[in-house]
Amino acid sequence: MLYDNMYIKEIRLKKEIHKDDSYIKELPVVNNLTSLDISRNVKFFVGENGSGKSTLLEAIAVNSGFNAEGGTKNFCFSSRETHSDLYKYITVVKGVQRPRDGFFLRAESFYNVATEIEKLDLESSGGVPVIKSYGGTSLHKMSHGESFITLMTNRFSGNGLYILDEPEAALSPLKQMAMLTIINELVKKRSQFIIATHSPILMAYPGADIFVIDDDGITKTPYKKTDNYMITRKFLENPEKMMGYLFE
Image: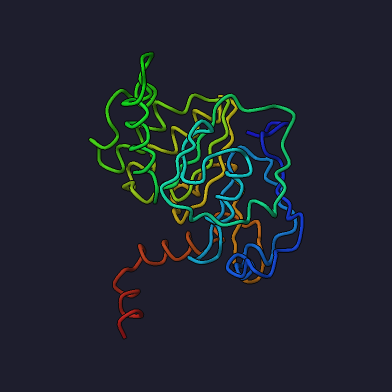
């Protein structure tokens, strides 16, 4: 499904990276970024570790008003300043419509988000507890994977912009398939997803755009032409043969 007006339509590199920012300047995603059309309900960024996909996702999120460590636009905590300056160098071209909901999910810092929710409720002087919007039970009392699914089921309400960084990190294959059904229901409610992932299960979402990031560029790639799909398929078809190659 494709709407004329996505919440985010395009990402552009607006100026040259300063020489002092050597870390981000060396990333393949930065070296090959000029302009990216992301006017699609579901967009995946994939690539090897170190390609810069998570750094790009973070920059998009921060530029869009989200907290660098994750959460909604109302979250403003910081446990440690570790995010890059890439957000300063990109322009996020927005559509006419504005999202009513939104969330930036970082697998590596979701524990901090769960802690912040509890902190906000402890400091609250009344009103509806924040945790009510997240299922009513402390996310710390769940497994990592359960808390991810609970977040998406209870907090994501639709008409939203959802930026997810490697959400499969805590999810079993079965839960990843459950996540696909949640994404699909939210897409029907006019939502947009921008996801960095290694998961060939998530990448199978019908009609999604997949951008592969490597030293040669940022290339829109058919699902079955991605390394994630081809390597996983070859391994599952003949794991003994693959083990032979690996261990010889």
